[in-house]
Each structure stands twice: as structure tokens, then as C-alpha cells.
Length: 198
Image (cartoon, rainbow, N blue to C red):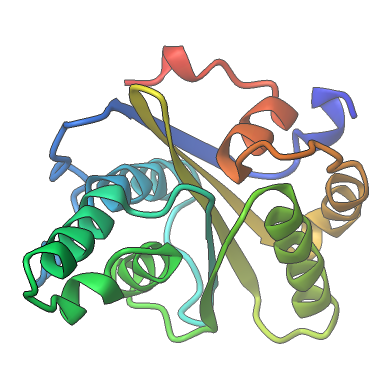
């Protein structure tokens, strides 16, 4: 699929080196005990809002990750090794943390859910998005894909609605990226050079 076919889908991204604690996303959150990957996703969310303005209160949030939120997963495993259960950290260790913090930041009352996995999870999320748009379940959907990749954390956000349904369908059908993570798949499909964003 060429980049021209996807130009009607609003998108934004953000990248940071692993180890950075990201707090400059500009959202006012009472609870900031999130994984750095969530901070990167919130920065990408800030970027798409700066381009597209305020979203509908019924905006749905779908978050995807293949790697999960590593620092919180590590706290859970350390707790197990030290025989100190850390259930609160377990709840913050996966894709659900990406979806819930984004939904809270937006003050959205639309559907909010998450998926873990690679290309198959992305394919399923695109299919669900298309069905939600066709059935008028919500006006807009934010599809957030965030992953750790070697020394960097990357997040990609797509804003989907009825106006880009045709391109969403093409994106869903042409997603044959094997085992790559959702964030890198979307960045490659959108023909974006992540190194230009800081």
C-alpha cells in the first residue's frame, strides 16, 4: 500500500530512548505511576491532539503492545522472587495500562480495551475498529500501538472515524507483517521516519 493511500488517516507518533521517564505529555493525571512506555504513548496522544483538536467524549481507545510495560513487569517478577506479591504492579504491566491511562487523559467515556500481541493483534484491532465505525458504536477511535524496540520506546496513534473507513479497510487487508510488533508495523505502513520526531 502506498503512503498516498493512507494520507487521510490522522496519525502521530513519539519515540524516546529506553530509560527516560516521560512526564512532559501535558495531561493532568492524578496517578503518574505509569510505565515509561505509557508516557511515550501519552506524548503521541498529545501530538495527535495538537494536530486534530479535541476529540469526542465517546472516543474509543484501543491499545496494542507486543512487549508490554517492561518496568512494571520487572517489578512483578522481582516481587515473586522476593516473595512479596505486587498485584497493583501486575495490573499496570500490560496493554491495559496503555489503554486506561489514555482514556483517563482524554476523559473519554467511549469503549476502552487493550490487546497484546504482534501482527495478529493489530489485524484484530483494525477489524474491531472497522466494525465499531460501521455500527456507529462510537464517533472516533484512537488506535494506540506502543512497544519497546531494542534501545528505544515507540508509540504510534491513529485517529479513525467514518471519514477514513475506506483506508482503514485497505490497511486491515494489507497488514501481512508477520511477527513484527504493532508499533513498527504502523510506522512502516505510514512511511514515517521515527528519527525525525523528538
